Length: 445
Ligand code: AMP
Ligand code: GLY
Image 1 (spheres, helix red, strand yellow):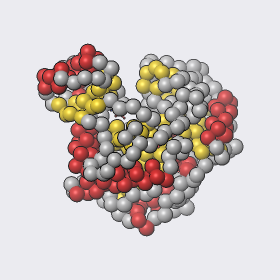
Image 2 (tube, rainbow, N blue to C red):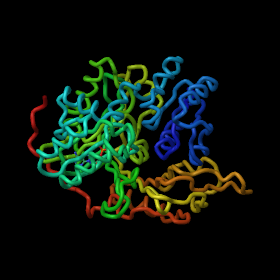
Image 3 (cartoon, helix red, strand yellow):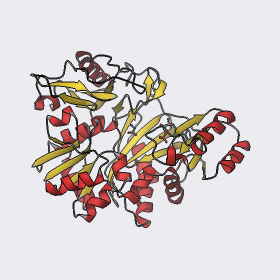
Image 4 (cartoon, helix red, strand yellow):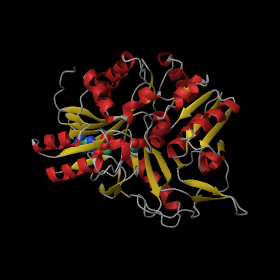
């Protein structure tokens, strides 16, 4: 099978790395990729958001399966477009991708399916939202309804903060159209967890879970980022919890989507908070997480192509899906200044020599996935330079979380570029909600 991956981050390098190990693969392209994918696939210079360009490339390369990484092309209808051209694509349709592209849609589905989530109200009128805040006590979370590159979620400790968050969305329009509709949610507390399932619209794979670190600074301080690292599996991810999440969250959502005539195919990602009343859904995403994909895909012990084709063709129940039980820790190395202004173009030292497959081979239990990197064209020796905010995800594997963590950090210390920054407390025991005691299960429905 000839496969085209859409996207250019660490998630897409991990997808390429894992797909490349499939015996059914005969050709692999990435649009637009990075220096890491260049070592194992052919990068094509088409933006992931260019639906016409991707469709044309898939057609001319006679691609058998397109695998879509990021949410923007999914929400824009890339899978529908490819479908209409007879090109199979892994990922949800535009209608099904609303589970991520519209928070109010996701909450409607959750209500309909009886899925535990924070109490919420949806508003399209600013005055009604402000009136509601006038009668509400305590902290709330104000969310822009649409895609806002992870920025449209505002945690408000008091009423004044909530009022200005509503105004930022609705009258200041800081998030553009995405904030014309808002959701005001109850503020929850507890450890957070990302849960993923492959689905063909009816059946679910066994779930896999990871924890990620969103804040820039040690101890979860500082600005929000795209993700500074993560680990999998979390120690509190028990068989019982997995069963509860499958039965009360994932399966009911898949069924509700199917009943609506918008079957959900691809990877379903639930962002959960483990509250005293049990797991509740903060958000759904229509794709793999980044950096979670980099720590979860190495755990996939089944053939990835067979699995993705099974999802697309509605026969996932016939495909065995196994997850490796070892521990994986991923550390994200970013450009100095990220997520604010940063400079790029710095040579990255300490990667495996040469632009060959060794970039991508698992050595000493580590894998280095590239994100914002590119091959500098103008030097005699091919060198890799930084080209984005998140530059690399360095993944370590071990028989315990501590071993995986030590392995990952050892590899991180061998790599350097000007201004490189990473958190030193990823998967550290301190500051992590290592103990989560589930409360009494509340009846579903
Ligand atoms: P979201 O994009 O909806 O996952 O929100 C981003 C982050 O905001 C989450 O990972 C949580 O840390 C936080 N968050 C979102 N919703 C809530 C909520 N209802 N209560 C507490 N924290 C929340
Ligand atoms: N790791 C969070 C996300 O991919 O949205």
